[in-house]
Image (cartoon, rainbow, N blue to C red; front, top):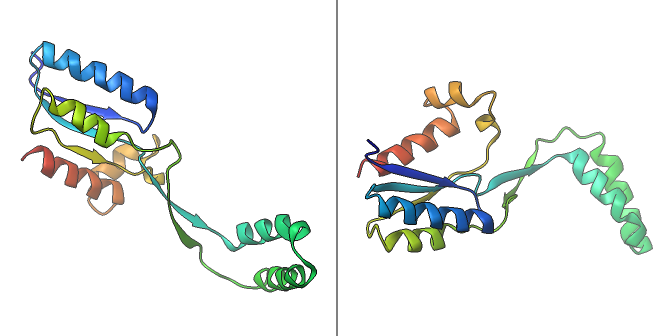
Length: 153
């Protein structure tokens, strides 16, 4: 018998519709909901010096002469530098999160429902996920440990 369920979704309007139907089905068959998980909710984004140079090159035609000259100087300097990638923040590759709406829908049948967001990270690709989840030294291993701790509450 099915004793509990964890619903995993993605941030998309279609997923919101599907998860709502899934929640209704679980309530009809009296299966408790353990957690709602929104997978691939965000991605930490980095930019390399080569990408900065490409962007500046693309913007050159739209710049005024003085700014264009400064950008060209910067491009030539960056080509000789050895810089690490720079963090530029979070991006949401699959759209706006629907997690709060999913949790509200879940609370109609499961008043203690909780939701969690998981990031999209490289080490969670299909080729490396299984081995990375077994190691607590990886970001994905730590994320799943946090999720597991909340599920056991």
